[in-house]
Length: 426
Image 1 (tube, rainbow, N blue to C red):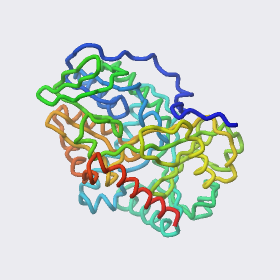
Image 2 (image 1 turned 30 degrees about the horizontal axis):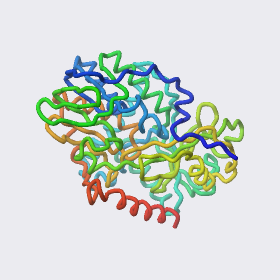
Image 3 (image 1 turned 180 degrees about the horizontal axis):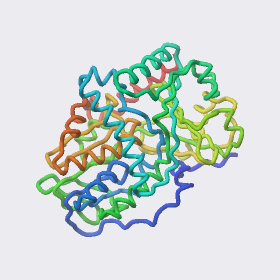
């Protein structure tokens, strides 16, 4: 009988020694800015504010990096969550270009944060997009040409079936592209590094401090079981893990769980799946994503569920999807298998808004958070300091509330995702 792998113990937690536990908030305190969530968004906002002399308190219900920021697939894509064609149709070509440039700046910010704060998160260049339907191959070629022509981005190379097959040893895919300006990294190492940098700049981080109430007003306050923080500005940076604190965010951002496993170190057998160090993300709506780890494992993600309660053992779910892509590895042992909760929106555009004049949020990255969250944290910090141009640009992106609000959003999303999962298979 196979021993279940615990769903709360990730590969990242195994290879990154956990820092000393930070204390919980106890008593009442005052800060200029109070932040809910010690993930990539909240920590980046805290760092950029603290570096400007702003007093910051960050409240985290569990531990730094416990949410999606420390559990995701680690892929650094180019652009926003939606492609430039859709953004042009939604906000116009001028603003679409600004959004593209913002995402390119986000790459530079990641590099700068790693270098300036000595954060070793095992960054590897290269990200392959693998198409599983014939019509998608031509779309990928046309999109690569568009990025080179209209966005001065010549780093995406189209791949035909044979070229892709040389890199990704699966019969599932018919072509695609490789983006040499994108890549992948260890997201928990990045999150730990940002937390240390924020604290060094003067921010205070409280773990085990679940926010039970956001009290609106001027000033506003965050209340926990054992204390409170009164602040001029509140930043809600929880993505999919808000749980009743701010309904205005929850109506637009839905939590879903994704699941990942890593194999044992494969040595030369890794080349039976991947022959390069690039990560891979495929064209399914319910996406498969995978990549090599620095120690020679295959990290594979696939399979979504619609609850914040994870299965006791997610490995059978992931194995079924891995076997679909790489049947030659279907029996390879897993050493780690885990799940994480991320936030999605109805349009897959991020939800960046002023909920109240002094309550701002950035959430709903829909799988693009590794690149965007640190940048959006910086943009939240800009907004607190009075620079609103980039915040307002993001606020233009259409993100309607889920039909039925927080009560009916789950069954509606499940029905929609089931439809798209069926379409993936046709």
